[in-house]
Image (tube, rainbow, N blue to C red):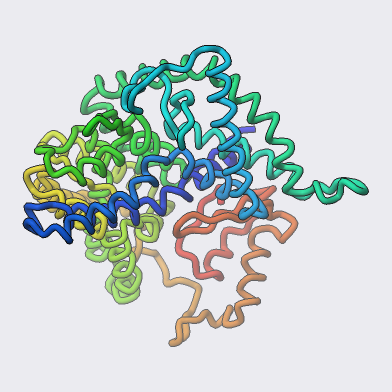
Length: 491
């Protein structure tokens, strides 16, 4: 039961990343828009300012309709097959919900009168694509996306008999969803206010806990990476009112990321909102893990340093520039879980320090994101030099702590293996045992207990996830044959 629940949570966590991975592109383009539309940067050049506003106005509908984005993205991410059809069904279902929910509010006399959409802030209702509906924020899209995916996975391959054959498969999915969505459009009117009260209470509790709450947020965001559940930690803080609420020029924005983006395009804001405290978890990607990598190299056996350098350099660049840390983190995660715990603790502590020193930066990604967002925002509004200064201290701290712990406890971090790897490598980089890719695949499958023992195969940004029926028959030594550097007992 626990294993099934964990698998379900991992599936949900992977799916929620599908829409999120596109949003940095939107953010970078909005940063360009901010530069072009800022008179302090481009002067009184009407053409450039109009061009910047044009770009921004074209992109803001994406962030203003994140609920729809998450609905489609979640359905695509969770659908096992026919993902294109799942995305279209998700769009249809979302529109059905909006129309039905609006009509129910109208029939029951609960529609709140308003002059502008901003008048509905705090009333429990909002306007989405022209429909006045209950205000669930991004959670509406997440719920709808999950519902669509669950029904889709159950019915997408079901045929209808005889003359009804044309209504089988994915058409049947939508037919089954219509009554369910109509039911949800009514039901959520009654239960969402209670859920919203719980979210509000949780938000207040997190904010009142101050530095301790922020430390727990940072710690879990790092510690849960092996399970893939860290996406469930930062997502609500980034894109829902759990991460903050702010009205700018009469328009409400929810979530730390959305608030930062809105402020980025408004040159009149002097200092960015404190909700940016939930966006500081990228510092370790640029600085901390660089210090860790230096410690690995300095403590490695002399005969392993040349090989280790070939592993560490691309991993460090990937982490610092692109903000993808798994290739580096997974070199020591399973070799030393103790070091992973210390890594997570230090990450949480440095996030607290950064916020306490007044940084209001966008620090969730690597150098590309950091420069794209913070340079256009300016020093006075984000205080980004504070972030960089703390980052340098973090790099040095990681190096010292990792080096001391590795030596003191003789941790088997990269480059400190007791013996040379059994896998010999030819000059062209291929395994002598596995020069044929088909042979390598066969070795991996046999190591996993055979094809019949493999339940499902998935992936995250940089690692393969395999669920097996019986982990007891898995031969861990196959990782040496495959050339993989890390492997979890839970696979």
